[in-house]
Image 1: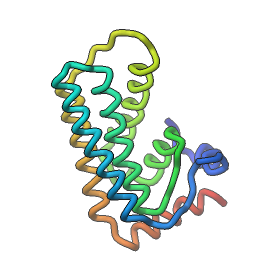
Image 2: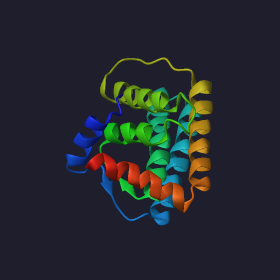
Image 3: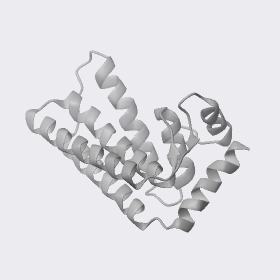
Length: 162
């Protein structure tokens, strides 16, 4: 996934693409709750041996955590690929190096698991641990955000628009 400015400019021009919106702690909390519920669902599906839904809920746990982060900053984007690219653009220097790749891979795996009728083989323990770690790290980033950092991140997106 490329997070270059040209792609982000394309995302900004799309209906339901990247938009600057009011910062929302309420939305942030709602999306973190969705992320936590996806984690619970992922664990329940793992216990039941339903690998397809382990993969899907793993992705959504990560995606909703990232969406919570963007909501806290005041950025909305309903196009998943654009959300991943924006996440990379804004946070690649502050998140673990593998996070963007893991999020994109989770998205790709979800699509494969849900839309193609192939049997899948997964490492449940790894997915459970990686997903939980991802969500916790994003929550830490949210908790540490300052108003100065939020303004700078919004400014970075705004400068991409022009």
